[in-house]
Length: 314
Image (cartoon, rainbow, N blue to C red):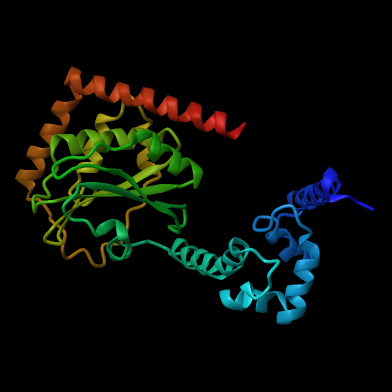
């Protein structure tokens, strides 16, 4: 008979757990697991060095089914002395985690094909809630306009923010995005892009193009609820020209599909003279050695991010 004092019992349980884990790796959807085996596997992470098979059977018999175990209250679960509190909490976390997953999945199943979709999606997110701090967030879309991810890329202070280029690269690569819409807010009501905004947008075009991903728009939001679109004001097109030494501009433009302009009434549209002045500033950037150096530094950041991505895949 196994003697707990010599560790034989522990070894038996450890060996059984390892076999079940290997089975899970072979069948991660748990199609071949019975209800009590699913509960047994979950209990591995809440009950240490004990036989969880018998406990799983006992819980399912007591409550009637696996789903009823998950629906049980903490107090009802803790009525079983062999079930530690951490295991009861783990069981009770399953449904909230599943609900959060389903909610997030529905959000990520959204299809965006117009500016009203873009603005609604952004304005209903938590990333739009802090108007006093400049932040950059991005919506990552597949070729059909379905949302693959929505995440904060950078956060700054009250007057500026630096885009985290390696993070933007990693996020776009991880979700296999086809196009990206970038948002950032200006804590004041000035939505006119600064030179820093123009450089950052150029950098984002180059970064995403290195993955075959389109920067579909960069939108600045002011505290007044108005927006400045780089695409609508033809600024994105001028910046794409500036990026020509680093990307295939013809191929980039050919793949572009604009969003529908159904409801962009709060947008700030520059007059032709203002647009011309801004475009002149952009083309002046192309001949500026310091700005060129900044962009080349970014190319190095992209290469670093790519190497980190590649090493993570191995």
